[in-house]
Image (tube, rainbow, N blue to C red; front, side, top):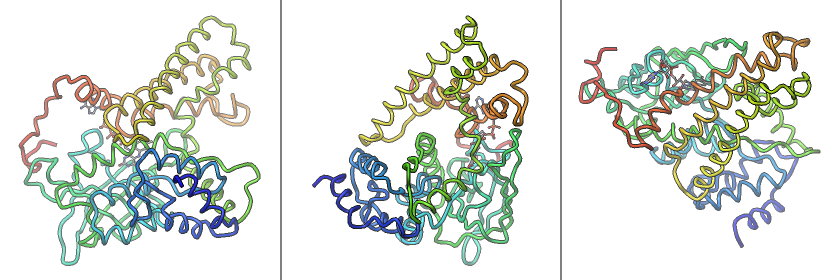
Length: 407
Ligand SMILES: Cc1cc2nc3c(=O)[nH]c(=O)nc-3n(C[C@H](O)[C@H](O)[C@H](O)COP(=O)(O)OP(=O)(O)OC[C@H]3O[C@@H](n4cnc5c(N)ncnc54)[C@H](O)[C@@H]3O)c2cc1C
């Protein structure tokens, strides 16, 4: 029996719509159906990526709630599986696979975003573990997360890429203070995180001390997959306790991210807006819409090609930067067309404004897509160096101990 057929058979015996969401996800994880590409002993079935993808499609088609998505399952668990100790896997993989614990990513700092390897948060060894001091910023979901996937400097005497270590930071402790940031679109998705002697048990490192940069690169490559994945919608007529809890979880989890469709520029609304505002015959508007469509279609094909490559077992590589750049250009062009169609009324928010404020929200949300997950300039550098083979950007920090770098 192939894996999707086996899953269908398993579902007929194990799906019970009155289980709690946690119990249901526990069953999925224990049977290895939640993340079938993960190793057999760690909530998976060691299936090759293409077969794991067909299992995920089968699960979505079966009309049952799937495993949790987000930083825990897409970024943290894969690096715990790749670099973590068995003890860490035993404690963290199942609760992450069931959604019992949630994660945030503590990478960026006020002085280290594009140049992430210049991060200055430091972790010093104490009697039973590590004491972490510094500041993180832009940390999406940090206000509600149980654990932070943390990068901190453990050695300032070696060049900047060599002195970084990746930690599992328990977020709910006195040394961690999280302050939500209010964005220009009035939402609050990310936070500042202040670390003042925050404690990490000595065994809670992901990989050895000093290999954090390698772990970080793996996380950043997976991050593009996170942006490409969205959970399947609940089927019409979804009923029972499991679905009620799954829908409630999805609503709560998407609350801070309600603006994410707007940051993508809402190209899906452009033609209907042009018609609604009587602008569909305007030659300039038509030309701008045509420009938008010529960006959108090839980008869709490109993403489908990458997804087929991932499903066939290829690791996410530098080509993800092309997809990310394409999404930034589409978002900007779409925001431009919306602004041309709406005119000055596009600046209004509230119930009487165009599309109940959605057009104004597009204008103030689109800049985020050119920043999150690495700015457009950084993606261009990656394309230039790793795809086109152009000379590398000069780097004055090579071979210089972090402590001696001008910052
Ligand atoms: C919506 C959103 C969610 C995010 N979520 C998280 C999160 O959960 N966790 C986390 O750790 N971080 C998160 N980030 C942070 C994000 O990764 C950083 O904002 C990003 O890497 C840029 O860093 P910076 O903001 O410090 O800008 P800087 O690095 O200070 O850049 C400022 C400007 O200088 C340009 N620049 C910098 N270096 C170069 C160069 N070498 N060549 C050419 N131009 C350059 C940049 O392109 C940019 O235009 C998030 C950001 C956004 C917008």
